[in-house]
Length: 544
Image 1: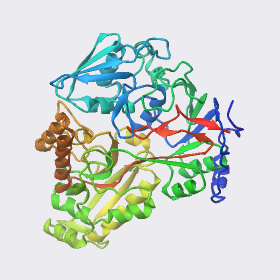
Image 2 (image 1 turned 90 degrees about the horizontal axis):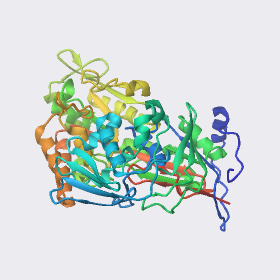
Image 3 (image 1 turned 60 degrees about the vertical axis):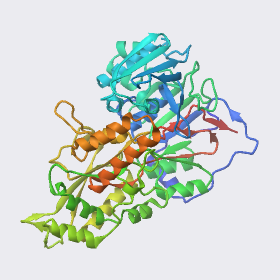
Image 4 (image 1 turned 45 degrees about the vertical axis):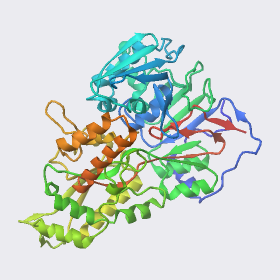
C-alpha cells in the first residue's frame, strides 16, 4: 500500500494546469521525528517515452538502470566502484581486463549471473544490441570470454584505461543471456531481464511503465545507501511531456518526483520545500556544430563570424535564470574531466570582427531584410532541432535567441522544429539537409571526443560526427588520449583536441545539459547516479 493517501493517478491535464497556476505554496514538511516507511508507490513524472526500456538513448539508460545492474558504478568523485564486478585489474600492456564477479547473483528469470553471460552481453552490444555501448568500445574492443563462472576477461586491440568508468553508463546494463536468446525482440524491448532492484511489471503505452520491487535483490552498487531489496514496493514511471503539467502534478500531490524542471520553477520549488537535485552531465554540451562539408560554413571565416555574432552567455543566463550553466566549449562540458577552459573562452560577442570576417569571405551584399548576400545567394542557414526530447522548452528559447542575434551581422537562421519521430528516423542528418546541428552526448570522460570527431570512412561510417569533419590529425590526438593511462597526460591531450576544435570554429557551446529533479520531502534518499545523472529509486523511501 502507498505510504500516504493518493488521488486517482494523474487527473486531467487541465486540472493540473489549474493547480500549477495557483501560485507558489510551501509543501507540508514531515515531522522532525518522521520514520521510514517500508513499501509504498513512488509516482515519478518523466518527460519522454522511449521506444524500449533498454537502448542507446539516455532516456533508456535512466530507465534500464532501475532494472539492469552494471559491472561498475561511479561514486561522487566519478571514480569507478564495484557493482556486479567486485574487483578488476588490467594487464601490463593494457590490453586485457579481468573482472571478478560478485557470487550468488541471479537474474530475475532465475538464471545465474556468470562471466559467460556478461561476455555474451559485450558481444550483443557490439553486434548492434546497443549502438551507444558499441560506439564507446568500437576500435578498442576485441573479445570477451569467461575464465570460469565468476571471472571475465575482456581483450582489447588497443589500451583503453578508462574502460571501468565507461562501463558505469546505463547503456552497459547486463541482461540475462537466456532472455536475450529465447525471448522475442519485443519482449526484451518492453521488459528486459536483469538482476536489478526492480522488474518491469507492465508498460501502459503513452502513460506509464510500472516497475515492481525485486524482493530477492542482493547486488546494489558499492555507493548505494543500503543493502537488500528496495524500500518502496513500486515505481510508476509516468510520461508527462508538458513541463508546466509536470510541475503542477508535483504541487498537487499527483506525483512524488518530477524530472526536467523548468528554469523558471526550479528555485521556487526549492524555496517551497521541495528537494531540488541538479546534475550537470559530462560529455558534449548542448552546442552548435557547423557543417564543414557543404554550404557556407565550409569557410572557416564564416564559422568564426557566426560565433562572434552571438552573446551566448547573456542568452543562457537570461533564459536559464542561473539554473542552466552557460557553456562556451563546443566539444566538452565543464563537468567532464579533461575540460579546456581556453576552448570555452573563445568567441565572445564581437560584431566588428564578425562583420569584417564576412566581408573578407565575400558576403558583402545585403538584401531588403538585411541578410548578407554573395553572388546572388543569401546567407541563409538551416538549424534543425529535436523539440521536446533533445532540446527542451528552455533550450528552444535559447535557440530562438541565437536566431535573433545572428541577424545583426546578416545571417538568416532557419530554425526547423523536428518531431521525435522525424529525429529518430534520421531526418536532417545528411550534409545537404542542414548547416548547423545542435544536441548533446553524455559521457563520463572526454573520450566523447572520439565518438563525435572520429573521421568517417566507407568501411567505418560515423553518423555522430555532426560537423562532417574528417581530420586524421585530430583523430590521432584523441585516440592517443584514449590510450594514455596517466590521467594528467591524458587530459592534456584531450585539452589540445578541444582547442583545435575551437581554433577552427568547428563547434561552439551554448549550455550544459542538466538532469534536474524536484522531489516531495515525504520521499527521501532519491539520488542521481554519477555517470549520467539519472534518478535512483533503490534507496528511496517515504517517511511519516
